[in-house]
Length: 102
Image (cartoon, rainbow, N blue to C red):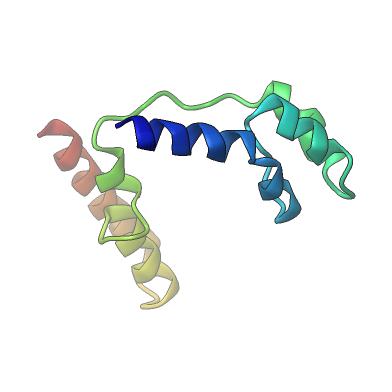
C-alpha cells in the first residue's frame, strides 16, 4: 500500500509533464507551469468558474464509453444507425432510470 501511495504522490508532483500534452494539472505548482505554455491561459483563467458535478451512484454504468452503457448505445443508434431521436431518448431514459433505481 505504501508503494502505491508513493507512486501517486510522485505522479502528482510530476504532473507538469501532463501540461505538455494539453492537459491542465491539478497540482498547483504544476499548474503554474501550464500557464507558461502557449494556448493555455484562456482555459486556465476559466478554471475558477468550473462547477464539478456531484458523484452519481453507478455513474460508470450510465456514462461509460469503455463498455456498453445507455448513453453510448443511444448515441450509436442515432448517429450510426440513423434511428429516430425521440424513441431512442425515451429508451435511454428508461435504461438510466432502471440502473439508478437498483
